[in-house]
Image (cartoon, rainbow, N blue to C red):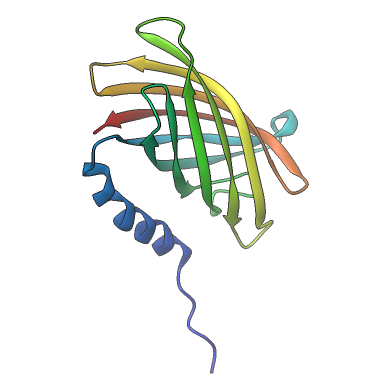
Length: 156
C-alpha cells in the first residue's frame, strides 16, 4: 500500500488561507506578483507567481512570508520564503525598493535552499496601494539566475 501524497499545489492554498485573515489587522501589507525566473545567461525561463503577507515594521520596512509557484528549478517548484522589502526614502510617487528573500523550494527536481536579492520600484497608486516592478538575482543550490516580477501591493 503506497502512502498518500499531499499535492504541493494545496500547500500554497493552505498557507494563503491561514495567512489572509491576519491581513485585516493594522499594519499588514499583501502583495501579489507574477513574472519569470531565468537561469544565468538566459538559458530557459520559467513562469512564476507569488503572494506575500508582510508585517509593517514602519512605513518603509516590511517583513513577511512569501509563497507561490515557480523557481529556478522550474515552474512546478513551490517556494516558501522569509521576505523583506525596504522602501528607500528617495522620491514621492516612485520609490526605489530593496528586496531580499530566503527559504526552501519544494520541487521534484532540485529542491533546496533559495535566496534572492534585488530591487525595483514601488509606484504609488494612492494612499493604500502600489504597483511593484521588481528584479532580483537568485540562487538555488547549484542553479543561479534572474527573477523579474510585476505586481500589486495593498496596505491594510
